[in-house]
Image 1 (cartoon, rainbow, N blue to C red):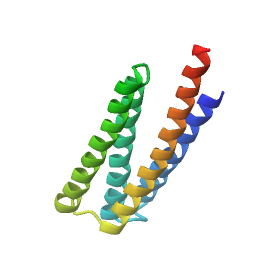
Image 2 (image 1 turned 90 degrees about the horizontal axis):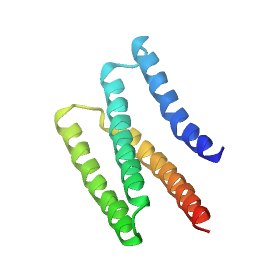
Image 3 (image 1 turned 90 degrees about the vertical axis):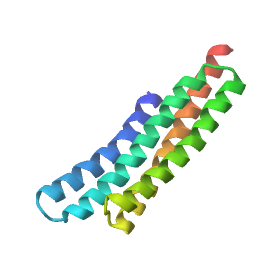
Image 4 (image 1 turned 60 degrees about the vertical axis):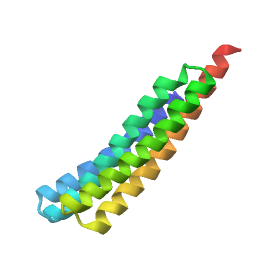
Length: 131
């Protein structure tokens, strides 16, 4: 039950955000550059989150040493990847800087909290099954 709540929690806010900005863009309430700024920020953070979930899933069943290398090493790699994507977006995609950065970091921290909850839940499940 708790697992479903975390998945629901992690999915409902991004879905609503995407739905709202899409509706506002289709109604021409917000300009295209603002829409793409918000969308790219959301997209970069979501891809970072998905890579984090993959690293957690891959490293969780391994030994503690491999787990730490995969999860924390993956965290460093994902941080550099986010930095590179942000620089590319600012230089080449002509996004609105404030909207893009704000959206990217809001969802980055949101997904980071969700990752911590997922990791905590899976670690507790492994501990319970070993007893």
